[in-house]
Image (cartoon, rainbow, N blue to C red; front, side, top):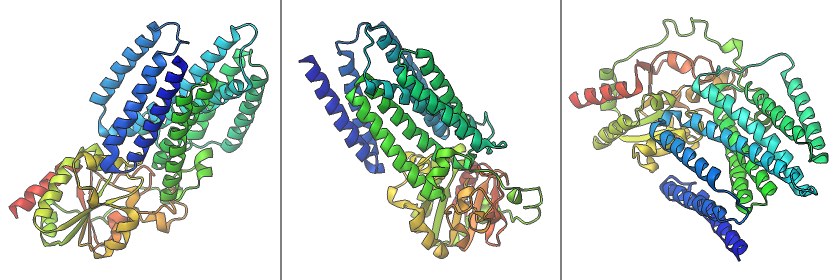
Length: 464
């Protein structure tokens, strides 16, 4: 009877996960989808706590209390700009949890005489070590790059691809040995450690410009690792939820690859995002070629404009300027100016980063235009305001085949009548290359903090 109730609870939780995932696909229903997913997880956790196989609750309660405190603190203190780093870190936590849980179950099985472990559990345990280990270390490297602890540039070394292949072969051999010798626990932990090493090798060559793809892929890995651990534990809800995360992560990774003109093979094996020497700025690229402007001059341009497109980027996120940008949008709209927002799929540091920020500021969703929709309209736009975006507007993606962003679809802001770029300095974006847009004839540079500069534009516009 208890087993039936447990399985029914897991089935209900799985249904809620699927419904929540569906609702998360649209901003208008995302909050409800998140709530349904949380409810499903609550049901799954409570049902698991009543599982007859649990012998002691002390460590479980302690883990819940410690995790809850950490979660609350993260929710309070983590800024929206640091959300990509947090996502990367949480992916890593999921990976190491799979490694430890599968390893713990293996040791528990080895305590039983005779050995009580099925072939399914043996294979799944090895997969948990491999995928979970890669996810853990790869996510830590991604976190370090995003946080600035590690260099955002691509780190390459001689014969790096060969080294990765050799390590992968060694992992395969260890995996086979651990399956053939399930009582040799040291083989399992060696497999997990070597997989962690491979995770570092896979992510360290990837440049900061491609971090959105990496985060999405690592998220998929964490789901697959959790699903494998579900087979180890014979836990249906873990299998279902892990499969959902793994599948959705792969789909999102493919979307990101398309948006950045990358192949999934390159993402899987790393080694892209390196900065070409031909596109580095030696200090003379911008010298004497940019045209600066002032908030008052931009206000005059806005006063004459009939159509305005705002392009948000990571600089806007860093400045926490989304609410000030909303105020500018409302002021322009009240004056009868048509205002929309151009959203590049990989603007910021994770998929949907700009959508989340603008939704937080209550920008109407119908004003957010995807790249494919807005690109054909730029030639009819009077004024484009680029707030902190760089690589996603860089024409080098079309003109320099050796650039790390070569072939990446960009927002064609250079086709507008006038472009105003709000930026702290002329420093390069994540790709590490200069942006010819900044020296274009129709481009004006407004140097300063994204929030402060936008507020100064609002004040000047009100005084005009």
